[in-house]
Length: 165
Image (spheres, rainbow, N blue to C red):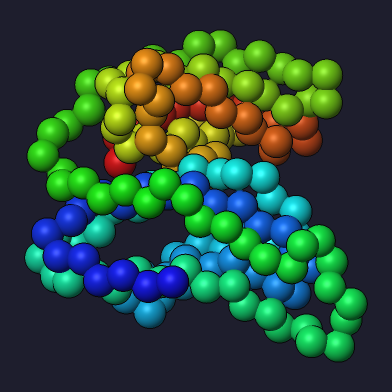
């Protein structure tokens, strides 16, 4: 699936895949550069990307099979839904994060509150110096979204912050 867009600076979409782990992928490209890929049994995830407003952007989603000799695992397909484009015509209000709620499996649930419909990125760190993205998403219509950090289960210490995208 492919689209060309001009004058758009924000892209959001949901996707899911059911494939052979590390062999078959659902991929997303911007201007023929791989931006993100998922493989295996991945439930619905939200995505948010900033695009160059000065150019026409070519967006492509593709399901790629890399191992044709193996028996298919899962449903051998991927899904993309709720693709939305919007101009970058406002700055989001600051985000508020609630204290993470540690789950029985060790993962952490983080409640993020901010202006509804804005792109947000939650980042995590173990030392307050090096930060890595946990997820990108668009805040829900009520302004509060809950995200899960599976990496918290293996981290002795975890700090979080959120920023506008």
